[in-house]
Image (cartoon, rainbow over all chains, first blue to last red; front, side):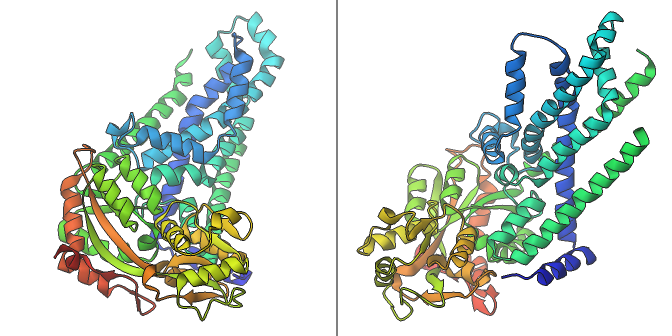
Length: 230
Length: 284
């Protein structure tokens, strides 16, 4: 069994010598997960806000549906995206399977419900507070959405981070649609899965520690940003 | 609405456009003719064979090879969905069926090694002295010692099922008791076997390369029935019009050529040869 000191020395080796392969994997992880989160926020924030403010038939059903999709198993989502992008699937002609783009699509679909559902709750709460005022001032819907989103920006930053955490930590979807191809679609989580399957548990755990370090760095960055926009 | 409120939207639009353009460029590079997509069994990838062979092929031909390493069963299913140019697995019958179904052009023998039966050093079923693999399996069954099966339709799983069929035991009747179907890849199954002191069957290349061995070791080896043949198949573009037959064919031909075959023979890990080429004999 691997001892803690073994794992620790692996982490030191990984972090001290900037191995180009590791940098490539870390960079791809960040690129894929940040892009997926960014796109999911781009659509999920206004969508969640609309769902929080606007009244329409089937609103409760929509809310329940979005909340349910937060629990989507990554493997299942990966399979769905795989079937869509497979060369024999409806979007096979795009030749996107086993590319970073396919991984972004999968993670985008995983993160979108999280962003939308958490935003909806935030905005609904603010709407309860300011809704009457805004209605009486005849603020248009788009204006209300924008004002409330800006007003809740601090909590929404956390919402974005929740989405990013989901993206960067999942392995089930990216391993199916990315294929864990060396120098092309290998990210941190699929590399960890690979080393585990080779029985190299200290290296797998060390990679896990590196992944957490990156998450820590991203969170610190966001936290400093948060201080600026307060 | 004033100008300032447009600024964030404009920034977002610029970032999005930049990202999307970046990916479109990456993807168009990938989709050209100079890449081969290989659906492969895990043992060849995890043993480092591709890291050894592919740079040679890529520098000779300027064709990039992308390997997706999954179990043989899944590799064949993916290739049947046309998500491959070349299939490299180890389940001859399934490969021939793949070709018969029109998905493959032709199957070639590529190389072989062998399977081994591994188990804990204390060997509760006392199979270490047994040479006949089915006798050993019966001994495991009789002593109700834990046996970890892949249970995932992989090449190794098919081999294991075939061996049980030749024995006098039907292990699936004891599934969940001493016969544990992991439904996982070779590596995960080995981790499980080591974790619960179970016996299991694995190919030699994976075992030599496997690091979390605990006190497990090879107990039965050398039986002719443990032979492990790898095959290589070019995906048929009559069935899969998007497949890259030209580059795929060059890769297959290179692998079964003298160059490819002698490179396979020269690949060693821990001073042991992992794969024995036998493509040319099959051609004669």
